[in-house]
Length: 308
Length: 332
Image (cartoon, rainbow over all chains, first blue to last red; front, side):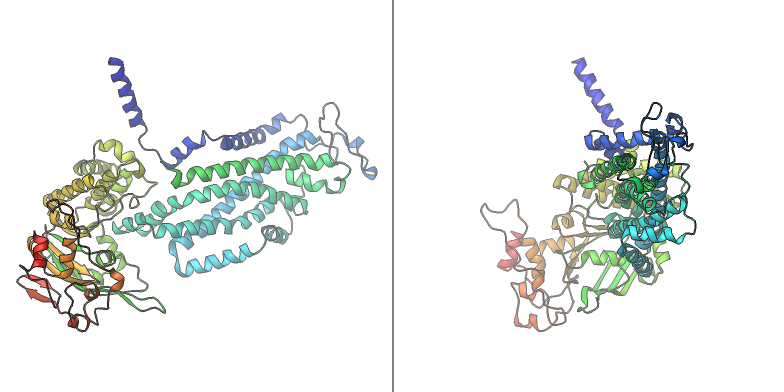
């Protein structure tokens, strides 16, 4: 009897503690139990840890050509795996395994940098278009349409080619600009839907100021597709940066390795030494897959229709 | 002078390449402080558009509003956007139909109450939180401290509507417009919400415009009732008179189509035939004529004028005469 009472009390306390479950909290509750999300999260978690710790984890200095005596350019000879160098050397005789490890860092910088810049630009344009409507909306959306009508890689390629001296930053910028219209259109669409929603009408009926309506009522309710999109864009950004490097528009300074750049550097020896291309390609695919898995499950979790 | 005087309010929606549509056609009514006035009618009769026009919430483009809506002597229709924004929520409150979609899903209830307090009463967040707690307490939400931190989806339908009423009354507006506040709720909760509104309106002396299609709500709450059809008021009377002796065939039909507890078993309900789609334009005759059991030849040719008949307004060529069998059917 006493036991029954106390367990009932526990239950009530438990209910009281559940007070204030935000959208994020309830999404997290569902994500925690999704094996797909966990797989993605583990991949991305490892990727982050690895890229942070890579300078200490790498057995050799990735920028020092320590196996240069084994490289014979004329005969396409590249240092094979040997003690201390598990994957051998690259074209310049640098330790390939260390370069692969440290490459994660620059790849992360490119992916996150490009996504953040693209997201910021998209948020600004999308908010402007969605909140103000009218001619602002028309102008912004026409620009966005023009940008979207070009194939994204071609656009990134053209932007990257506009800079006289390609660098890490120009790669990031080129990839970021391509993502801006994607974010802008997505946000504008969900903002427009919010504009005609009941709670925005209700807020207007309370005399809430326009700024507060946009930033407190419309924007937070429009963000979930954008959040999902940014995890997907992280994957595309890494791939597009790799493509730019492959096409020779990447960072020419190869002391700090980046996977896409590593991929681009070895295109001449691809038939004789496929492992030099395969390793960075596999790394890119795994990381892109990780972000995509997370993004897809996040989209499902943030869908208000699945919410209880 | 009444608190709210609506005169000849007409709302015309005009889209490019389409016939202009008169959603509200010369509606006039008064609301005194502390009085509850009902606007009744079926879907599409213009009752919601009337309320949105009073609040200035209709889209500017493609909408033409004429007439006057004077609140405490100022014509709300002539105010600038900014002036109107200052008044909404402070002088005029509104409660909407669907309490779930009318609350911001990503903001806790507490912040939604304090938002309006901060906006119109210039309170600081902390002070506003204390006031918000009192407000939730007043509208009968148990454990307000906890509820303030919760999100709309965690509250029950009735509690959400209570929260919305708390928000609408936070700044003690002199006029409250309730647009079908009980439609999305189940019957027991409807009764609770209605008695709560009745109580609050009496306590605060708020004037209430009650928009509904539910005659039960009207019977329980309203002092004066305006029956709308096709954008025009077809009958206006005090509650008791309207229910005792509906004169307009439309009002009569509405009352006859309500199931009654004391009706003989197996007796059938009498529906109003047809739908709003059958209406003829008011400019040609009586919009209700094609569905009206009392219709005469004159009804489809001449627009019935608004007539004052013993303290009630009536717009009909051939009203139901009290004491006839048709009228007795409702009274019985």
